[in-house]
Image (cartoon, rainbow, N blue to C red; front, side):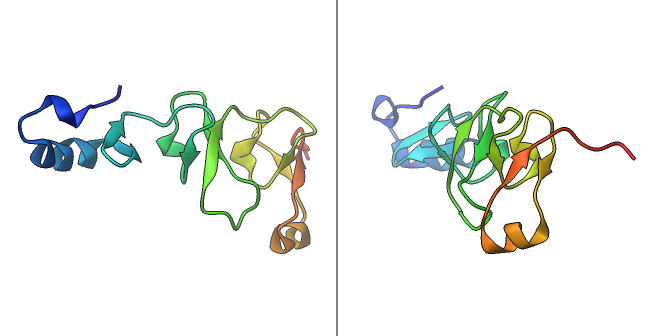
Length: 106
Protein backbone atom coordinates (compact mmCIF):
# COMPACT_ATOMS: atom_id res chain seq x y z
CA UNK A 1 0.00 0.00 0.00
CA UNK A 2 1.55 3.29 -1.07
CA UNK A 3 0.26 6.60 0.24
CA UNK A 4 0.43 9.56 -2.13
CA UNK A 5 0.32 12.67 0.03
CA UNK A 6 -0.44 14.94 -2.92
CA UNK A 7 -4.01 13.58 -2.77
CA UNK A 8 -4.69 15.09 0.66
CA UNK A 9 -5.35 18.67 1.81
CA UNK A 10 -2.92 18.51 4.73
CA UNK A 11 -0.06 16.17 3.77
CA UNK A 12 2.20 17.13 6.71
CA UNK A 13 -0.38 16.18 9.34
CA UNK A 14 -1.32 12.97 7.52
CA UNK A 15 2.29 11.95 6.90
CA UNK A 16 3.15 12.31 10.59
CA UNK A 17 0.21 10.08 11.58
CA UNK A 18 0.50 7.49 8.80
CA UNK A 19 4.29 7.22 8.86
CA UNK A 20 4.23 6.63 12.61
CA UNK A 21 2.25 3.46 11.84
CA UNK A 22 4.00 2.42 8.62
CA UNK A 23 7.56 2.38 7.23
CA UNK A 24 9.08 5.21 5.25
CA UNK A 25 10.15 3.73 1.90
CA UNK A 26 11.37 7.02 0.43
CA UNK A 27 10.71 10.67 1.24
CA UNK A 28 6.97 11.26 1.06
CA UNK A 29 6.00 7.59 0.63
CA UNK A 30 4.99 5.22 3.42
CA UNK A 31 4.32 1.52 2.97
CA UNK A 32 2.83 -1.19 5.20
CA UNK A 33 5.90 -3.36 4.52
CA UNK A 34 9.11 -3.28 2.49
CA UNK A 35 8.98 -5.29 -0.76
CA UNK A 36 11.49 -7.78 -2.21
CA UNK A 37 14.89 -6.20 -3.10
CA UNK A 38 14.08 -2.93 -1.30
CA UNK A 39 16.29 -1.51 1.47
CA UNK A 40 15.58 -2.56 5.07
CA UNK A 41 17.24 -2.51 8.48
CA UNK A 42 15.17 -5.14 10.36
CA UNK A 43 13.29 -8.31 9.44
CA UNK A 44 10.06 -6.84 10.82
CA UNK A 45 10.07 -4.18 8.08
CA UNK A 46 9.92 -6.77 5.27
CA UNK A 47 6.69 -8.10 3.80
CA UNK A 48 5.50 -11.58 4.78
CA UNK A 49 7.86 -14.37 3.77
CA UNK A 50 10.88 -12.04 3.48
CA UNK A 51 13.75 -11.23 5.84
CA UNK A 52 16.28 -8.40 5.80
CA UNK A 53 19.33 -10.02 4.16
CA UNK A 54 22.61 -8.23 4.93
CA UNK A 55 26.04 -8.84 3.40
CA UNK A 56 27.73 -8.93 6.83
CA UNK A 57 26.76 -8.74 10.48
CA UNK A 58 28.15 -5.18 10.58
CA UNK A 59 25.91 -3.80 7.82
CA UNK A 60 23.05 -1.55 8.90
CA UNK A 61 21.15 -1.77 5.62
CA UNK A 62 20.16 -4.88 3.75
CA UNK A 63 17.57 -5.91 1.20
CA UNK A 64 14.33 -7.73 1.83
CA UNK A 65 14.58 -11.18 0.27
CA UNK A 66 13.49 -14.79 0.74
CA UNK A 67 15.32 -16.98 3.22
CA UNK A 68 18.45 -18.66 1.85
CA UNK A 69 18.71 -22.35 0.84
CA UNK A 70 21.16 -24.89 2.27
CA UNK A 71 24.76 -24.07 1.36
CA UNK A 72 24.19 -20.34 0.90
CA UNK A 73 26.43 -17.86 2.72
CA UNK A 74 24.84 -16.48 5.89
CA UNK A 75 25.59 -14.42 8.98
CA UNK A 76 22.57 -15.17 11.17
CA UNK A 77 20.18 -18.10 11.70
CA UNK A 78 17.10 -16.22 10.55
CA UNK A 79 18.62 -15.71 7.08
CA UNK A 80 18.33 -19.46 6.35
CA UNK A 81 15.34 -21.61 5.38
CA UNK A 82 16.69 -24.19 7.83
CA UNK A 83 16.89 -21.51 10.58
CA UNK A 84 20.54 -22.53 11.14
CA UNK A 85 23.66 -20.68 9.99
CA UNK A 86 26.79 -22.75 10.62
CA UNK A 87 29.29 -20.01 11.45
CA UNK A 88 32.27 -20.04 13.82
CA UNK A 89 32.73 -17.12 16.20
CA UNK A 90 35.98 -16.07 14.48
CA UNK A 91 34.27 -15.96 11.08
CA UNK A 92 31.49 -13.86 12.58
CA UNK A 93 33.87 -11.39 14.27
CA UNK A 94 35.91 -11.01 11.07
CA UNK A 95 32.75 -10.31 9.08
CA UNK A 96 33.00 -13.55 7.08
CA UNK A 97 29.92 -15.64 6.52
CA UNK A 98 29.10 -19.21 7.35
CA UNK A 99 26.76 -21.54 5.46
CA UNK A 100 23.09 -22.33 5.81
CA UNK A 101 23.04 -25.88 7.12
CA UNK A 102 20.83 -28.40 8.86
CA UNK A 103 21.08 -28.09 12.63
CA UNK A 104 22.99 -30.94 14.28
CA UNK A 105 20.92 -32.94 16.70
CA UNK A 106 22.90 -34.08 19.73
